[in-house]
Amino acid sequence: MGNILRNLDWSVLTDALLNAIPVLLCITLHECAHGYAALKLGDTTARDMGRLSLNPIKHFDFMGFVMMAFLGFGWAKPVPIDMRNFKRPKRDMAISAAAGPLCNVLITIVSLFLCGLLTPLLYRPGKAVYYLYLTVRQTAYLSLAFAVFNIIPIPPLDGSKVLYSLIPERAYWTLMRYERYGMLLLLLLVVTGVLSGPLNSAVSFLFSKLLFIAQWGFDLISLIVR
Image 1 (cartoon, rainbow, N blue to C red):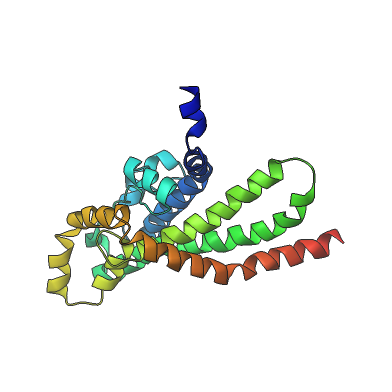
Image 2 (cartoon, rainbow, N blue to C red; image 1 turned 120 degrees about the horizontal axis):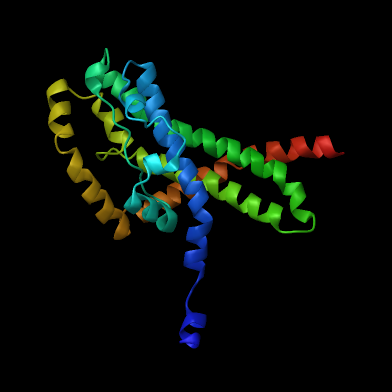
C-alpha cells in the first residue's frame, strides 16, 4: 500500500489545491459583476435573492468548481437575471453577460501587477512570499481562462448572450429555449479535449501578451526600494 501511495502522481491534487482559492475568487467576482451590472440596468433579482455577495458558497457549483480546479475551465452557479426588468432586454442582457468576463480580465490585470510587485521579494528567505506569488499568478491565469471560456458563444455561457443580442428577436428567444442543453455539450467538448486544447492555446497566448503588466509592477517596486 505504501509503495502504491508513493508512486501516485500527487502533482494533480496539489495543483488542484493551489487552484482552490483563485478559482473561488474568480467565480465569486465574476458572478457579482453579472448581478451588479443587471442591478444598474434595472433588475434587482440577484440582489433580492442574496446573490450580490462575496461569499463564495453563494456562487458555488460543485461540477464547475472541480472542472475549473483540475482542467482550468469551468463555471459557477449562474446569477439569476430577469430580463423583463430591463428597458431594452436584449441589449441589457448582453451588457450584464459581458460584465462577468470583463471583471475576470480586470482580475488578471491586477494580479499580474501584484506579481510584479512581489517578484523582488522572492529572493528573501522563507516560502510565504513564494506561495503568495504562486497563488496570485495562478489567479491571473485562471481568471483569464475563465474569461476566455465564458465568451464562447454556446449557451449558457456569456458569449452566447452577447452574440444572440445581434440576431433577430424571434431567433433569439428560440435559441434561449435550448440554453439548458448547451452545458451538456460544453462538458462533453471539454472532457474529450476537443475544446480544451484550443482554449489552452488561446489562454497561454493571451497570458504571454499581458505579462508586460507584471513588468510594470516590478519596475514600480524597484523604484520604491532603491
